[in-house]
Image (cartoon, rainbow, N blue to C red; front, top):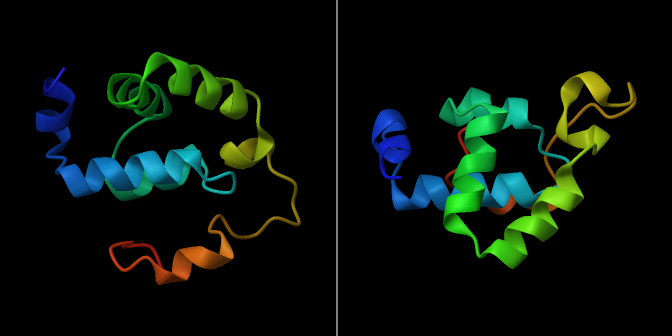
Length: 95
């Protein structure tokens, strides 16, 4: 379904970054929406397209209901959405 890629003008690097952000526990879907313009449903669709079914099911089970993946469900003491290692990622437009 390349139309999703064309609609948002996603490059292979952007797709890789979205997948990486989706796997990170602290990165909420809202951060992906802010940076790439994809809603949670579109990220889920992208992940299903790009991953094997087995890995997608693992990711989906991990993410579903996880409070850190949704800003509204997060505890108030969690003020950042990046992991400490994310500083090293040079293509991240959110600082």
